[in-house]
Amino acid sequence: MNQDFSIITLVLHASFVVQLVIAGLMLTSLASWTVIFGKLFGLRRLRSAQEEFEREFWSGKNLNDLYTSANQREDGSAMARIFASGMREFLKLRERRLDPGLLLDGARRAMRASLQRELDVIEGNVGFLASVGSVSPYVGLFGTVWGIMHAFVGLSSVQQVTLAQVAPGIAEALVATAIGLFAAIPAVVGYNRFAREIDRIAIQLESFIEEFSNILQRNAAAPAASAAAPR
Image 1 (spheres, helix red, strand yellow):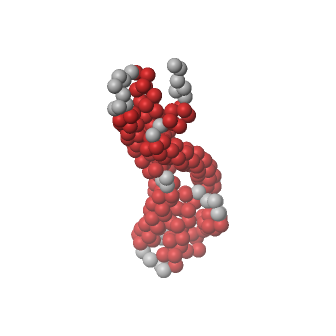
Image 2 (cartoon, rainbow, N blue to C red; image 1 turned 180 degrees about the horizontal axis):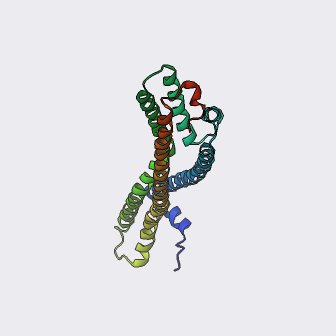
Image 3 (cartoon, rainbow, N blue to C red; image 1 turned 90 degrees about the vertical axis):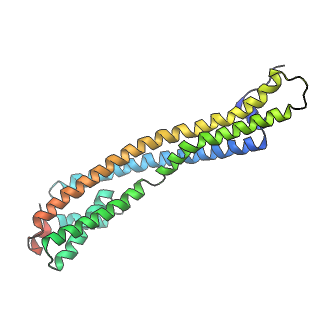
């Protein structure tokens, strides 16, 4: 007798525990795809805004005007916010007529703190992909083991077991492993890609902090009125 071994049929005939595992894996897969697409578009917007600010910064524009513009931007880049935090601290300390070294140290600390906040936001939900990639195969394997155990328990009262009797139960159980891999593989690929891209963004932001610190250092000893264009 021919039996229907389609995925939907196997899931519908699986035990309740296996169905529960499959449902959980499907929801997890949907959540991971949501994170993947959200992170793709988010990093693309971040790169675009960052390139725009970097062009504006190195165009020789007056830094006070650039600082005002960065504060007014609602969708500013991470680099713009780091610049604004460093410039804000520099101007505050400069009003106190502190030592130039203290001015620079204060601005660098403010930019480092802002950098950490920005990276925390950028890395948001990336850890979820790592968890899905590492845990989903084992959850699927649990569903498979449970399903096979349930299938053999159901055959315990049968005197003569044939392959036709065993195959449906095993196939139903193996679906859990397949769905676990279906959930894990995109999550692992997405995590690896985003981790590399976030590392590049972090290096770019750290390089900007060093370059901007050099600009501030050259102007730390200048009169406050001349700080408008410290290039």
